[in-house]
Image (cartoon, rainbow over all chains, first blue to last red):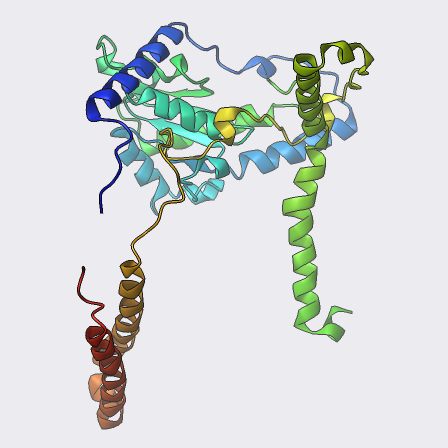
Length: 196
Length: 158
């Protein structure tokens, strides 16, 4: 049985290269962090704050991470997920392969421009509301590869990042700390401000 | 009251709870957001196809933001097929070779045998002759099926 080729390999290179170059041209500016609602002082009434409290509690205690681990920080994430550090204490034991069922992206590792369109697409396909933890030096700024032509200098070029977690790689305790910080961030969110 | 109906009543109660929490509640809570998006789409459709109609459309009443508890933000990328972040190429409704079906059938038969033989082998001495004969009967039955598949030329890949 012969498989019908949609692209020849050379054509595939050209199509991919064009998409990557367009993405590089589009993402020269850093996407601002979604943190407007942290400093807002709102007029809160009882009904709204109680709804907010329930919603934020539900959202922060059932964050399911999507599978997006391009490089070696993934091993620290696996350790965090496994029995010793036990991420299921935070309701995060289910790592979803499909972005439809996930609302947290832990971007563990170096991202090349060739891989960037895929990561951006996965982020776009995640269900609302969604959050991103930039894990490790490479995710924050490109790390030791920052000056390389092929490495994305920080995930915030292509997707908005909520929490930056330094380290090369960060220890599991540090990742848990970042998750706790994200919990605090979510718990300050209100339906009025929305943070959108 | 539930005890009068036995476990069926409990099952129904759980089914109702499940339906409300997973289907009805998210849908109704995202309804204002959905309506806004649908109405905007409708307006765009009218503007492109019937430009003279646009002045007759009333503007959508602005829903307060706290009514949009469940966000609804569709986009072409979000609604497209998920393929590990890649763009899908070709159709997803492709045909598989029919012979895989036979392989699956033979696999299931032999899989059952493995499932039974492992615990039997662990407790071989304890179960004695009766267990040994029982497993022999099982293997014999499966062997007949295997011979049948062999005779039907399932094992040949042509």
